Image 1 (cartoon, rainbow, N blue to C red):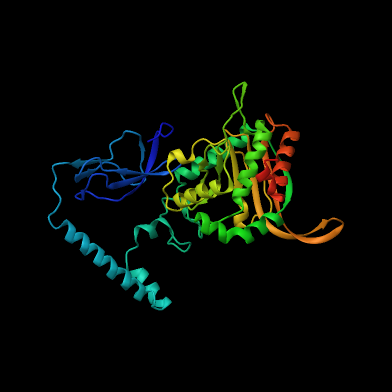
Image 2 (image 1 turned 90 degrees about the vertical axis):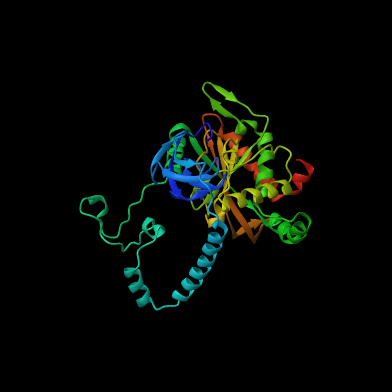
Length: 371
């Protein structure tokens, strides 16, 4: 594990006692504060004993299982694997056929068949009343599950941020007309040329870089009695996953162009979807951008991602009547929010920072001219 991790929870055993495992085969997954880690077999052999059960908390360095390296792989290992694949195919076909049964038949089957591991973990609201020995779980219509280590860590860090920072939020609104028009006109050509999609996030990331260069205090951090100014810019991008919020980092973006941001965003998105984010992908960062607009958020005040000093919140694009040159026009508008640590950043600097982002996004030519 990384230096910042000293313990984790055993989430699931992928192999059991008596199984033969090849070297580097994933044997068990461990859930840490930030990510799930796969523990792989250091050598080939037969698992003779599992030393910890699922759900147990283990410290780094603790033995998880014993592997007899003298154990030999069964001669019919390949055949058995083919048999498993064939059985899986039959099972899949059978399940598709069974899904066509009536609701009444399904209810009968559910009563007769034992529940799978997943169904035990995610109990329906109409699950049977638990034992009287556990009064906390006897309330009708409630299901109690243990908080995951990642969710507990998220809760701890968010509360720590509120307790530590003198958080203040400034708001503005951005006319997205020009950037929307650019995307419509060039998205197909952009995809053909670079093999990736052109989105709105890259424009805000590029604008953030320009604003951070103009207001370096927003890229700084308080350490003890000192203020540390950074010459480098590493932007964290908040990403919501089924397991919780993660903030992978795009590093060294001082001279990035839109296409560079889109490439990195595509890589991080794929890693997040496949659960392949590594610790080095999420540690660090000097400034965070969070896009709640993808979920339909109209306005909100994001929480600072410690130990950073500020975070930019994007929101959904909504058409609204706006006064333009003395006339009322319908424009695609977005509210943006900058939450900052008032211990370090003054209101003038925060407002100027957010106004710089507004100017660049509303007039993207500024990115080309560097103004």
